[in-house]
Amino acid sequence: MKLGLGSIAFIYDNINRGKFKSSKELLLNAIERTFNFAERNDIKICELILDPPEILVSKEKQAFIDLCNSFPSIKKQFHAPYAYLSLCTHNPWILNATIECYIKSAEVSKAIGAEIFTIHPGNAQFLHQSYNGVNNRLIDAVSFLLEKIKSFQLITSLENMPKMAGFFQNHDEFNKFFADINRGDIFLAWDTGHTASCNDNIEELWNKLHNRIKNIHLVEHFKKNLDIHPTLGKGSVDFQLVFELAKKFNYKGAMIMELHKVEDLPESIEYVQRFF
Image 1 (cartoon, rainbow, N blue to C red):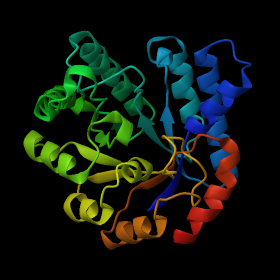
Image 2 (tube, one colour):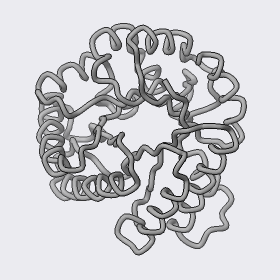
Image 3 (cartoon, rainbow, N blue to C red):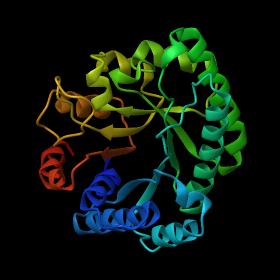
Image 4 (cartoon, rainbow, N blue to C red):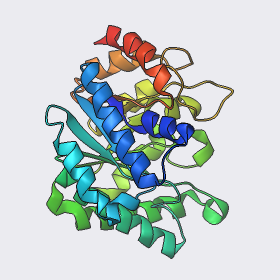
């Protein structure tokens, strides 16, 4: 297990500062701040996200790649954009845009030397109430995407969703997806806060899916709030059990702190380091 840092806290912080002229400028600054914070705090892994993903189709893409390569001591992971995107949608225009975005994201993942590539399944909304229909659409979309990006040799992980998403929320759903897709090149990015919001049994999750877990997002959860990513150790997530299970099943990957506020990071780092 290795402690890592997500860039999303610095993205939110830059949004709140309100001094940037474009999303591209804001995101590049947030990525640089993420790397600098990681170096100051001896964190060796950073998970990066570009959302909105304008950088992926602009001249700033090379600036992003160069910025990542200027921090060679930090291992990179890439989290694909997810706002307005969905792999389980029955809307063909959104589905095609999602797949195109994820192919571009895989390309940039390879360019920055990232091995772990995390994607979202999307939300089950409106006419998506049929679980089999949504699950089958997700299987078809993920299978198609994996064929398109297989030359990049990434470890592609699909993230579990929070309660409000209405889909891909518990270990029974994950088991069905992995059994039905029947591929060895798709894995699980496990978000602890999302699981807490769904009241899933994490011991059963690990017992059945430990071989599929390749990325972990350390996220806290408050029972009466939505997905706000507060200071670790302040909410309902049993992090003691999280780390016990990770050690029991010999998890070797990253533990990415995914918080929404930069000011919550120092206390969160101090809290989780006791488990390493």
